[in-house]
Image 1 (cartoon, one colour):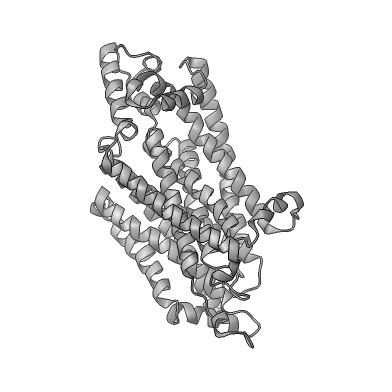
Image 2 (cartoon, one colour):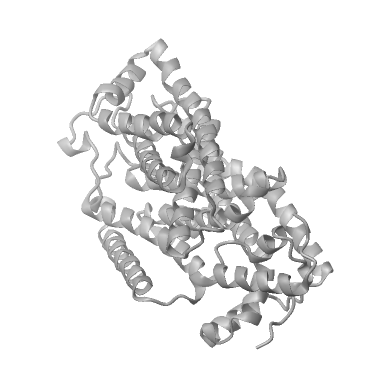
Length: 453
């Protein structure tokens, strides 16, 4: 885009962009307070359930000797999947110089930070003795996949935070200099500290660009590793349903589907709630819809491969597992995930009407729910059919159903993730102000000016 030559026009446009993109920060109303109250209430209930679990042990859950991975690990795999969208939108597509993704990248990073943070917390909540977590790092063996998992989760979270923070520094300086009495003094102090004395000179911008590029390159192997290692936790066993060599790319493809759907939903919420129709435009939803179709087609291929090959050979254990999925107890969840999470979305999103903001958001909600169902049926049914027969144990060992404690903790994870995203949107702009201003032709020198009162 051509640069705006008129100083007055540049300043006027920058003022408008700043006002629009800080609306989420300065807005204080009853709906916002009620929203945070609801989130904190569910978080409190979930923490209460976890305290009960720590006190009484994992016996309060539905997990037993055979199904030792329940809804917690399904949640863990789901959040790891959703977090991968940060690497796709904020890194890979940026490096490919796809310009339309710039307004969306900060949303993707918010989701990535919230999701991978909760993935780490869920690991702790699945432990019977969380006080021994440090032993994983102090005495963990390299041969243990859980050590790899914790390592890549921690590394991915660190890089995601940096990839969110470094492009935010110029915006923090704008917030420091322009918000004034619109926010509390402590908030201005936070902006001042986090902006690291930003002045907006060319050398500083060059440093930001260089750091962003390094992080974008680093996060690609780490992002691929986080979900590949998670898939190895399953694929390294001989159990029917997990004994597969395609689990690595299969999990990564499914992660892109879940993450893309999550970004579309959050985009729509920001667009409606904060009046950002001119920033999250129809073209962005249209492009995200095309991206969702592409990654869904890729994921559909892996789904066909996952079931066609063992179904063709139909070994005894595989046959029992597939029969349970296709026509057994898990059939409703399985077919819901396939039909409403893949087939119907792919067909509908081929038409431009369904790639408009509201229709694509509704479709994305179904895709995201289906993505969680998919993780549940990856984890649970396989454990209910071990090679050795289940005998001489109570009836409840034969099947798994989450208890109220598990459901409370599961709800905690979702509401805690939403809480993190909400807090980030309340403290920081949901679109990068300086990048958007630059895209509209505003020279960087106007970004460092202190506005006149």
